Length: 453
Image (cartoon, rainbow, N blue to C red):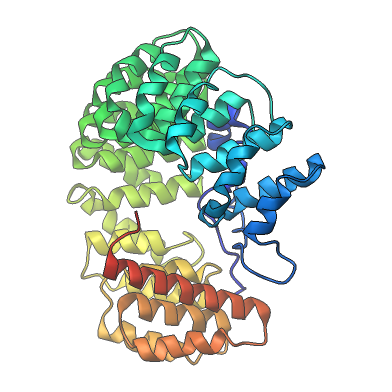
């Protein structure tokens, strides 16, 4: 029986991102072992919800608790909080350290007032004062990373600081700057060679954020694939994957991690091999095919996606994937495997059959629906999707409509079905259909106008 879907988020809430900054890298690896969290509800205008102007005014309230509540609410609004920037600038001098920390974070996320905020944040990179967001140096480091290349000269002294905390703060900024901080690669390699395991993780993650320009660090990163700490192994895999094809010489070491590491390490070793591409060679590709039977589903899923990036080396995976997709509940969600099989064998009927089956039988039909937009839908599959618009199951009906809209087929009938569901008396059905319509409209607008900067 198809159950109602539990919508999944792909990342942690913005508000949680700074709460434990000092241990963020270790926490990310552990998170791989847990199920995805339900998505948070979007902030909307409703009765009783304070406006931005009201929250901005509340930042001047005499009660500390009221100011804390207001600044947290503004932080949750994201871009919508921009009209409150003048009030947030005053709040960074609030008597309460937590109000100051959240105001700094929010201004940073908005990249607001760079002439004021960049030097102010840079001056806080050595501030170890504790807040509910983590130490101030972590708040400042994350926030500064939103300001782009203009922030880089301000973090160089901190990166070279003898203080581990200050150095870590600078690397949090580099994480935000990404490729714009490529000139810092030699300094980050030097930090990898320090006898400071926690700081090394920050350096590894900064190199990951820089991406392909970190290629000179590949051989140093390989040394950390055999670390006694699986968190270090986890991030080293991710960093090598971010380097991409230039890290092909590390494929053998990544295969060792794929075959012997803990689940989060195996998962990221698989992803790294796929990101490096066909240069990994046939032996490493065969190891990924073997990983399709790994006991951990996240490892299997990453192996599937990686194999889709390894044509033509992954041809031997075709019969394995066909078998997996034809065994109900043995490989779920099946959509990523269907996409990879279609990439490797576009003539195979199995991918479309698996996706259609997921729309009716699986607890995650939206994954299958979206995948229809990425593989070629035949006339026959379109006709079968149209029939599902008459399904008595509202979730099957909704995501059959989404699938049709993703493929650009029967758009009028599909949109009408979604609009009907968006008027349902059932609140969950109504909100889910409305969310699908909103997402598809945003996707359509982006395809016309290009991605939002």
